[in-house]
Image (cartoon, rainbow, N blue to C red; front, top):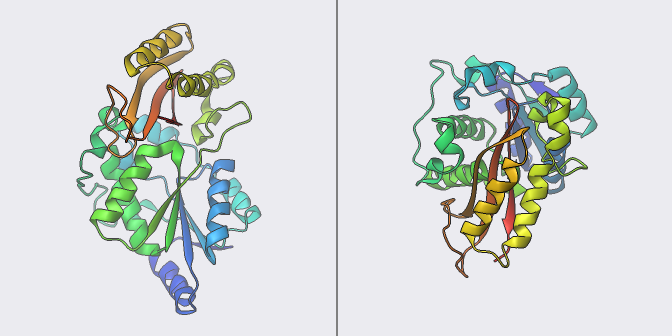
Length: 282
């Protein structure tokens, strides 16, 4: 595996591959890698000649400074994992490499996707995501890029950015990778105290029950049921739950036959914020 820290050397390397008609798959990460990331790399390897992974903790997508400071940095272990996954190239730039002048976000119009769910609780977050992903796409110019569906709103926003800016990359959403007990795999899971970690799988179990209830219950009944379930869990605090249209991400009040729906949830386990979602069959 080759490791690059600056844009120029990486671009020179990738130009050689492109000249030889090699296809490039890209997996952007913020490090603290786990099996979920490795599953994205595996998908990328199946469909591309060369796989590039980036590790960059992007400061502009954190609206909470403490969250940025606490974000785990495990670069030595990450490199070992990437080598074990047969990653071809790691791009691990400094903040000044990505933001040479000011650490500020570009302003985007995601046609309303940015105002739903996470956007209501994390001001400016998706401008930060759009800024860094656009910069990485322009540096790496991959044919395909791979994102996990745990951050489904982010996935839809990246697709919208690619469409609006006419970027020549296909954005691929990959299934949520879960722990054996169902908890969506996340770098944040390592920060969970033992007691909260033991109860955290309740989030996914509840989503599975909602998936079943969606056949027979209306949305207001499901919302009320879920809120009552979380009131019984003193170690978990519900931030939001919504059933939304997959395309617009707008919360639905009633089911329509020609729409695709997904249930989205954000929960605090102590000070650790966990998100998850599940596809609903209509």
